[in-house]
Length: 306
Image (cartoon, rainbow, N blue to C red):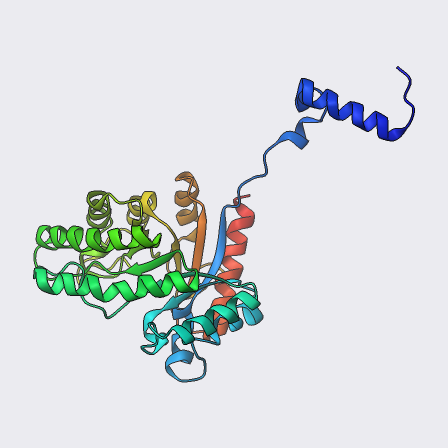
């Protein structure tokens, strides 16, 4: 066959490729699917709670600080810092505009103080469910995919479980209608028992209901603490995010109070990928330094697990 010019040759190769498949022509390494990213890093607003409560930082300015000071383009909000403006459409649109203009992803809102979704009293429980509706609506406006809630309540384990299944079930139906995930953090009480919380989520049985495993929150009571590694493994199958809690660091930059390498081996073994939020809660470093140290640790973990 006479090859008249390069264009004809490339055209013919293209036709041959289509007819016989790429495998016979291209090297195998060009056919491999790109490796899925282990996880992305976000910044949880609670890492800066001292600055926010102290008036040194506002909710509106938080996303830009995350990007400019820490190089993080995914953010997680905490409900009290909205200062009761979660239904103010002008406020929400201003926050959305600021994040969109800077290429920042609004990931989730952590909700506190809206009642107990595991309250044994049905009227109180339904009121708590309805109190969360406005946060689902706000998340939708901001482009968040998720709100984090709590599964607290008073009573025996079984009583609170039954109530939490009902409360979360009701709220998750509202989440489903709006395509917003409802996720529960291990956040003290029965919810810090990995077996208990995973059982609750399993019984709710809604694809929009899941967990937010927090690496540090496994204290059930003043006298009882759940095994964090067991708890993370139990909550992981339902996780729609992870909360990388840090308190202190050793001289090698590792978290001093827990084994991050062990945690992420559990995460990788579970084939989990998604967004991991930095939540520094220590006192020895400034908020900014603690966030930077946590990010460095997560980047090191990413490199180890490539």
